[in-house]
Length: 403
Image (cartoon, rainbow, N blue to C red; front, side, top):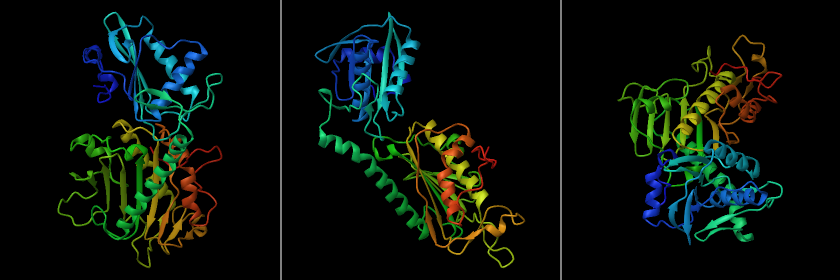
C-alpha cells in the first residue's frame, strides 16, 4: 500500500490518510517520521544515513509528519513550518553530504489539514554505493536497507554494492556490441540503404530495472521526440520493442536512410546510413566529414537525452557511438577547399567502437553539453591521425553550430 506507484506531485492528504486507515506499516521502501529532522549534527547524520540506505537498496519514501507506533502509522502530525525553506534545507544537506550525487531525489510539501507533510522520495540508484561525506556525521560510512530499517552493510555486502556498477557497465557494452553486430549484418530493425553507418546508443542505467517502462505513445509529441539523425521523422510506429521512427515517408519502403528505436526500458538506438559525403564515384569518393559527423552526434544525442529526462528517465546515462563500414574511407576535418583537407586521414578498419561517455547531468545548453562529449570527439579524431578534434576554441567553447 506504499505510494511509490504515484508521482510525488500526485500525492495528497487523501493518499496519506489511506496509509493510516490501511495500517500500512513501515517497509523496506517506506519510513515515517513524526517530526522534522533537527539542525544538530547528529540529526543531519541521521538524514544522511536514511537517504543512501534507500538509494543503495530499491529506493523509497520518507514521510515526515505521520506518527507511527511500532512502524504502523496512527495519525497525521501536520508540521507548522515554512515548507519551502525546509525543502531547500533538506536538499542542501543531501547535496553536500553524500557522494556520489543521487539523481532523481525529490522533496515535496503535501498540504494537509492543519499544516504540511514533507515527503522525500529517494529513487533506487544505479550509481551505487553512496556514502556520507559530511564531516562530523559518520564520514565515509555506507548504509543499506532491509525490512527492519537501515543498517551498515558488512564487507561481503559492500563488495556486492561496489561490483554492481562495473557489472552494469559490462552489460551496457555487451548490448552495444550485440546491436552493432546485427546492424552490420543488415539485421537491423529495418534494412539500411548502404553499409556505411553511424550508430548511436543512449542507455539509461535504469534500463536494467524491468519495473521501469518508458511511457511511449503513438501521438504527435512522441512523433517528434526521437527524430532520425540528420533529418526529421517521416513515419513512425509502435512495435514490440517500443517506438520506431523512420526517415522515409513511404510506408512500403523496404529500406531506410535512418531510424530511431526507442525501447520500452528507455534505451535509444539511432542509426544513420548514407551519411558520408560524396557518392562513391571517382569524381566524388565517399568521405567522412568530421564536423558534420560531430554535429550530428552532439545534436541528436542531446535531444534524445533531454527527451528521456522529460519522460521520467533519470541519469546517469551512457552514450555509445560506433562507425560501421569505414575501412579505407577518407576522413576530412573541413570542406573540400579547406587548408585542412590534406591533413585528413584514411580510416584503417571496418568498425570503430568509441569509449562510452557517462553523463550524470544533461545541460540545457547544447554547447555546454558538447564539452562533456569532448573525450569522445577527440577519440573520433584520433581514428584519422589527429591528436584532438579541431572543434573547440582556446577557451574550450564548441565552435560548430548545434542550436
